[in-house]
Amino acid sequence: MSESYDPDAHKWLRRKSVTAQNPASMRTLVEYGEYGVAVLDEPVSAGGSGEGPSPLQSVLGALCGCESVTFRRTATDMDLAYESIRFDAAFTIDIRGRLGDRSVRPHFQSVRVRAIVTTDASLADLDSVITETEARCPVMNLLLDANVDLEIDWISESDDGLVSVPRASQLRDQP
Image 1 (cartoon, rainbow, N blue to C red):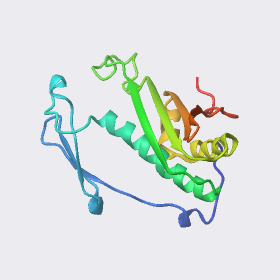
Image 2 (cartoon, rainbow, N blue to C red):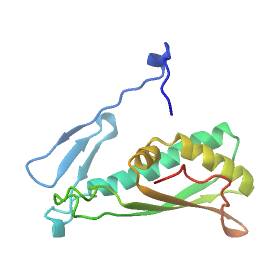
Image 3 (spheres, rainbow, N blue to C red):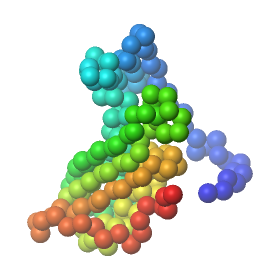
Image 4 (cartoon, rainbow, N blue to C red):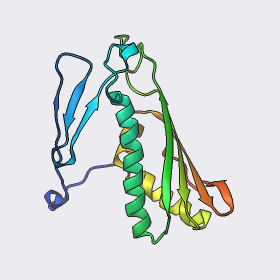
């Protein structure tokens, strides 16, 4: 995507912030202002206190949350009615990267998501909303830009049961 000059860009930019405090441990307290506080930690087996999700688990949760919000906005824009979305997500990581082996990336190797949308919409209409959602979702695109092997399996759930959504377009090309 090429950048072009937009004299009105300042009208579209938003700034959000958080503060975080780490007491020289694996536990970090993240303050989201009016949205509350979260604890990020590592499991006891990895030297943490196990008081919260790991930072990478929180990124996975952010992906699911961002897909949810983006899907809602897109479905509204495209007049697609749905009842809910449920996500099951997992990632793999080669821990050698975070242990200092610079030949190994320290972030996700792969991310797999199963998104189940409860709707009576046609599969073609659902695919259109999914395609636009994936193009708009900031967290998903951050992962793709980091060359994460990302696969999302979208499922339609209706009175007819569960049906995989045939995709007219897949995630943008990944190396």
